[in-house]
Image (cartoon, rainbow, N blue to C red; front, side):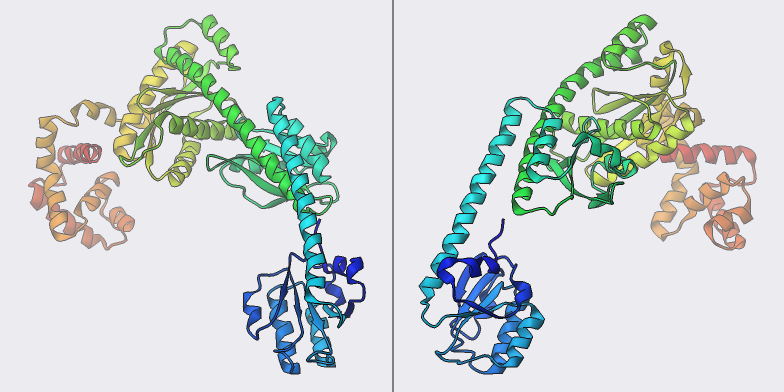
Length: 527
């Protein structure tokens, strides 16, 4: 609902104004009227003005052409000129330039005072703004009523569709739900793109999507709750969006955000009950019938094949966010990612001390690969936290969940030390090292086999420890070690000779190689 240059011409009190050029710009929006009385006045316009002038300071044709170019650049709606005071007429070059730039030139009758031009236009603009404000208030009241009556997202989508005369889809990311109004239109939506939008969750991967019917364009409007994107409104543009439509969308976004906040509160309360149930499961003291019965209350079907994942949230000391709230957000991000990836419901709970527990009924290899992607994504977006992730072995039987949890917990402890995701079944000798990490014997063992090499590297800026680690991991093969480190094999021989002198042991003896391998693992755990 915009006031345009054409509307100015249609005002009864302004009959007599003629269009000299720029007819193609008559539908430009007009927000203000201003008078030009200085040669540099174009610097102060903001766009969408109807500029009026006597051309007193623009009497030369070259100045008039420059004025038209400057005003067109500033997105001025039209230029009104009162002739026969200082300028009797406009030359063809001026008219041609106005036509070229699409700037309407309006000739104002000589007998019209500026006040007779300005007042009617501004009155009409203010009247339209008042009508717009009244409609906006009506929209606000309608959407507020939706909240007060406890209506669901489907009602919000229906109301917004009726107000904008466009089909509407609303997505909420808390429970991964979506509604479309009119209902039949959902069958014409590109479900693949919609699913990608839900998967992305934290950020829309695109600004628009295309429906399968007549390629109708869907414009995406994010819904923010506490600075997090928690949903989207998609407006399917069967007609262009007006200013009033955008106001309606803004109100719909606000009430949907309130609805989502309510969902979050319900889910958080529900999660605390789930947390207690998860703790019962990992203690392994509940019988099968009890577990199944209680699981059904949460909509969980407890599988007979389970893998437990333990995630420890390690916080930056400067982090000031609410711990449980952060834990809950991370829990849901991981749970939703696992659920989407495996297309199965994931059991998840928050234990004490920033520990999250997940129960997954999938094979270990696929779990491990996907957890690495989740870890990288969450840590990239939350710089103040680090995730230590441990994965237990897969066990048969509900009574074995406790065993998988114990294994995942041990693997998580090592994950914290090794700075990588650890799978219990692949920890090997590391399992034996956990009780030994802080012992005096370990300190003496490292002084004998590892610390002299570390000290030499720090003093001389060398990479002997890296060379030693590669050498023992590559079955003491000089050429393979050289290839892995991109150096000549003689360089490897020289470095290993230096290491032998530092530690006082020959690297040709299998027993010493075993000691060094153990020493390297202990050193990694301690550092």
